[in-house]
Image (cartoon, rainbow, N blue to C red):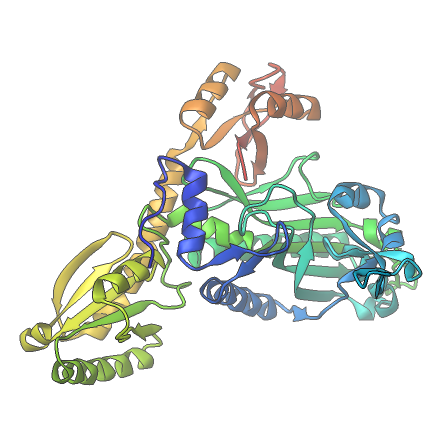
Length: 490
């Protein structure tokens, strides 16, 4: 395996790109701005999928699938929605290729679509057009549907996992009889996202509300979870939107109430994407490569044999086979890397780069001494330990590593939330310390945009747990009732 990646301190952006490539997670494809998620990277995404999917189903949601192509006219029905996505849409205009006089493949100009089709940037419009046929009365509600899909948002400046023209995600779309139910749903999903991100990814988040200028196009309220990366930039890790009756009105989706009245349906939508892979990488990893929390790692323990003869190899194999049988009973995910095409040092470097939480090394001398060498990826330490009770030790250590990874990220996040009371302080922290800046804001879009123009910092969220506190806006000096979190962000 090729050795070395750029240091985080030297060039954080290059470090990230190097790590994604060398940890075998993803690579750029022949299609500009798109990526190939490689098997190891996809295995991590599959574990995210499985955990979230179970949580959605436990809370009464079902999976479905809706078309990739959306008639362009659907977008014109919800004005703010189309305005929010218009510049990112890929549009299909023709349905056939043909040969020109020279035998080249060209678009057949006689095969123009009557109506252009948009490659979905998100599915609210096609889904609410569909829901019109599903909903007649209160008996048809609620509808709680999720889909796992790909979407396209045409990006010119791309970065693997964080911002690509095509990416994978899940998008939930629910329909309710009352405003209260829809708001409750929106907040329920936000809590699911926060718990998943903290307890599975090991990434601490702040739950909050987006400002008017930062909320989802077509939503009344957008709730979010915001995480902090090691370079002091924020990353929006998930969003849950209260859509009110906007899409129901746009697509004329009404239901008959228990009292026999006709009312518009209330809605929510919500999603997380492969951006979570970027959050995972940037919150935990180091200059030696990826660091994976055990709950998410496709391989929790890798075992590397050391031997000088076939006889020694057989002895190690026998021990490892017995050990891994006990691992299976404890549902510990392992790999026995007995490839004879690579030396142990290469394997050590490879699995360190790939972030496997624990590495066990077993040789003839270890068997004689009744020990194994155990290396922890999160601390880059190794020690010789007894074979007795090894499975239980590994099981407990995986829990310890999960907690340690989260605690380290949380402590970093907490140390980088800085309260400021003046614009001068604001700019100094932004330039010298980075992280979240907690400050008063006058609530106007004008002030929000001026700060963004001057500093490139945006309001990441209005924290849901923020206490009311009288103060003055750091920029305008006007009265404010609570602090918000600013940061530069991905």
